[in-house]
Figure: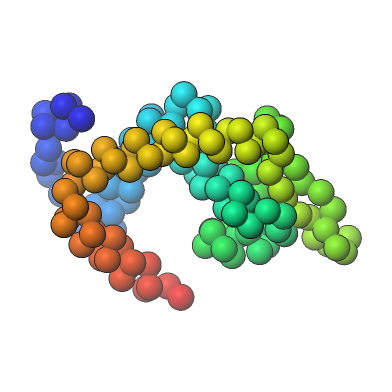
Length: 147
């Protein structure tokens, strides 16, 4: 985290959306870097964690639970299926497919979750608890812009 002092603060944009997108990309890159030893990105870990909790679920239901569109979910699932971390099986009818974690996926979640905890602690230390709580409240408020 020492490098942060060298570049903080960065000049903000006049556009609120651009400032949030830049911050989002920076946080995503930070988590991805911390998760690198697991071979997972933060988006992949989030998907695997949802499957760990939900067990077996249709693609549409998972997209809804994760609050992402099906196209993004399908794109994120492909490398996980190719790596044998998830299994995609026929659903209850011919139009649906269901997803579940494989044992290899469960093992990947254990390592990824441990590294995620390190990233969480680093962000908390960097932001400070009070600012982090306020940020989470504000982000929740912004997310409510779109039901």
